Amino acid sequence: MLKNRKRTNNGKIGTTSLLTKKSFSKSRKLLPFLLVIVGAFAMWVIIDARKVAVQHSKDLDGIIIDARKFPIEAGYEDLHAGINNATDQKGRDNKRLTSGWDSNGLELYHSKQAEMDGRENHNISLAGGDKVTVSEVVNNNPNFWSIVNGRRGWERKTFEIFEKYVTEETIVVDFGTWIGPTLLFHGQKSRASYGIEADPAAFAVAERNVWLNKDKDWAQSVSVHSFCVGATEHAGKIMTMRGAKAPGASMSGITEALARKPVGSWAVRCYTLPTILDSWDVVLSRQPVMLKIDVESYECQLVPSFYDWLVGEERASLPVIYVSFHPQIKDCSPEEWARVLKVFQLYGSVYCRGGDSPMQISKETTFEEFEEMKTNLSW
Image (tube, rainbow, N blue to C red; front, side, top):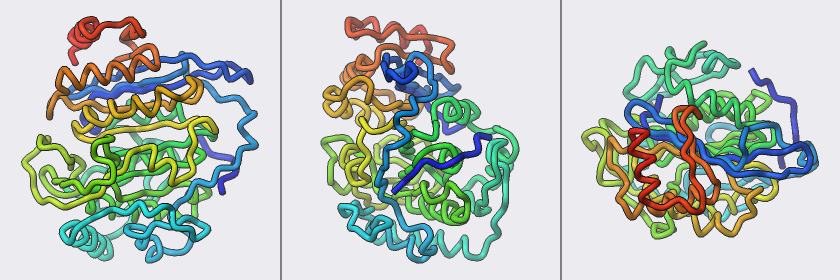
């Protein structure tokens, strides 16, 4: 059970979109828009059902959400049991959303645990904000925590987006959470933050980092989960995931194309996002929800699959979506882009480069017009 509590508000390469919604005082009248942020090697798109991100109306304060999570307070060993037998804080089954990892995946996970047991932990000012404790194990990037300790030398725009859109009322679902830098950041600001990381080596570190902060006042609303978010056609299926450069090195994926030479593979089970949200009792109409999606080119299949789910929602309930596209790994096909456009049209507009370059998306926008917008923005 989550209640309102006082909070302190103190680059993955890709193209990102953000879909959000604006609240007009207590009327909660919402208008759609989509924001696209273009990076040097990929594009982040922000899709938003609000013209500007502002605080949501205070009449949401009375909502009580049963946001089922791993029992962090029970101890680190109990947290491990969540991998293949997830339970919530009341000991319920959590609808059996398991990782599906095979022996390769479990070996990677336990090996990374053992590696961390002999290493130090550090306190850092994450992205210039509050102090968090993290393992020095960073999976093939030995200087990572130093570039986000007291500064934003990695994905500066992403941290700014979370500052702008995440409030004490927001539930954040972070796909591709890696070792947890973004999860630990927005977890300090949100009503609840869920990380999803299907790479066993990355998950082990993210899990440890969440646990290391278990005594913080925000920690009980932050959790990390080891399954895969899949498109509709992959619902409930076991998929093959591969590491890029090395397992845990932030670029693992379930597509054939990867950013680096594939190294290692393991099986993982995928679930649709509506199934995952249902298992956590997260309902879009109850509170603002934000999705951060960084899945190494799988977004071309994943984002279009959201259409049938979102088209039936009231516009006021649409989630903010901050999604990274990876054309440098594998561009979406024309058919996939056409389906992505349908999702964008549920929101209205798309903004690139942190909101500086709008894409005037409407229900009347043709595919040819959409392609021209992308070309003009160097997608």
